[in-house]
Length: 368
Image (cartoon, rainbow, N blue to C red; front, side, top):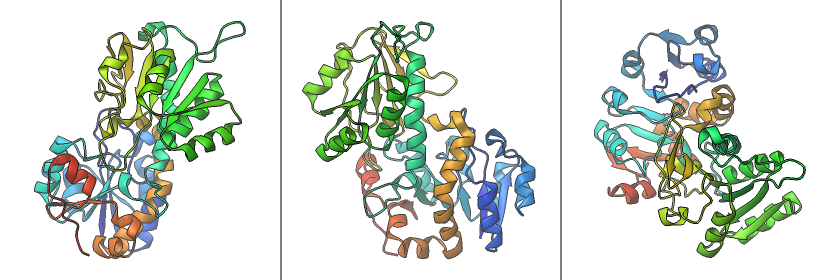
């Protein structure tokens, strides 16, 4: 199989889909690897490292897409890449189709086989290809939020950790999954006063036991949400429904409960955001104000720490990607129920129910 690795062109995206280690695994299995020149530069991986393991460097995205049976990326294709896709081509990347009907239509029209990292799911419900970037984003969310609270960023001027004689900042994390856990770790590490909201009592018990009372736990309902919004300096949105749009748990009206200059970091922005006033931003222009509240909603947060993110992501994606290349997508999916859940579109059909529900397309699971 010919596997292509294009340079990511989403604004301020510096990750690369495949490490030289992955390219080596593919070439040793008899595959051809095409890497667009400069694709790894943002992660500190020059062309020479790919050449050393047997990959071929090509000069244009058009050549990568035109020659490759499988495209191995990080982020979903954007408009300039749509015309480069073709029927039957495997697209292995994050897709986040539920809140993105334009991309969904483009992939269906092209007839690609879209295997989305974010919906590959193990029997225990965990998401092995999403987890590494959730860990990164969760940790970055508190760093970003701390910056948002500085006066020059439009914030209230609160230092999350406080100092002796001055109380620390109040951080509320909405959602106790991987993002929420990593946000809690960072916020506690900075010395903030931290509360986690979730609808799972077993998960709240786990947080209580894990952090020995250093994090407050609250059941997530509208009453508790409103109470915590009124207290919080920083709110981290960390809610996920696999493959589906995130639920809107914080309305614009609720912003009126918050203190002027407080901040919201909505990590769920890739799936539409869990805050009504969320709109995607970029690293070049990451924040905006709504009703005096600083919003941070960068849709590719891990791209800011591209080297760490690329290595973390590839640790998870290489085994599945190698399986797809070795067996072909149909056999790979048929023999692995977890990977089968990653199949979002194929042959012009939506094959993942949450995406079908969100975009208004028929749900047509493939029998392979």
